Image: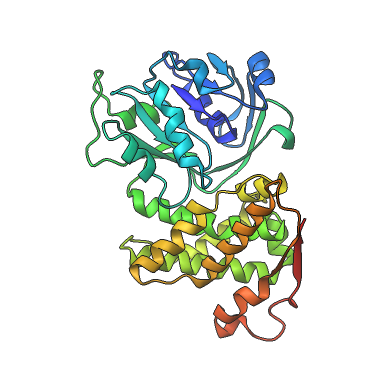
Length: 354
């Protein structure tokens, strides 16, 4: 198995799979290459306890192992606008006709590039329900997991209607989930993916725009909470219109879970703070476009997406001017009357994205 690139989620995934002695793990590391090459990963988790994960092979690029055809290729990166094509190109040198591709990306519409590019291969999805910190937020080579959104850490399933049975009699899904009781099978892939999208597609954009972690947002921004609620409603409506069976109480449970868990630094907020390109297509763009295609408009999501596009442009070196964002102007027209009551929303304010 090779995991590329090795972010915190990929590190936990590899650590758990490596509990099988017969599962050699190769990892592709970038900024933390020297630390991981020397000492491996030091894991501090609330779900699995503490431990050390020393990969069998640590490389800087997938090209360094292109002479090897792997049984499993785990794609643990977030997908930016240009990423799907780069991802396909990076997998080509290490895949064979029997290679299983595992995707751990959040969002909607993430499978098409790989499914179209690798028609002969099995493509699995691994939905992650743990929130992790790595690198500059802790110390090099240390991965810390404090919170989770589910009793399971990962849920696995196949994008294909038929899952091939390997030589030893296990399905490709069972091979991954069997070593760890915190790995489970997805009962309904589309329901699980859209349920996660309701959470990620609402909290990620708002925390990134406001520059606040989840508990900071809950405590200090009525406007931000109103925006999270509106986005979660729109995402849920789009999913239901697309025929996905979503629980009626999903939105309220999602809000409650954020209040009860540790404060989260969402992936989009982490990228924004580091002025990196954010994953706005799978968490935002694909949702409002899919909504329009089925007659379920998502005007707030579309407006938020446009702000995030401008933020991504601002994060590129050629951009120099600040972006003025008036959040109240975006959300106020689409809020239900109960949320437009005087005193509910904070006064409109402009945010300069420096």
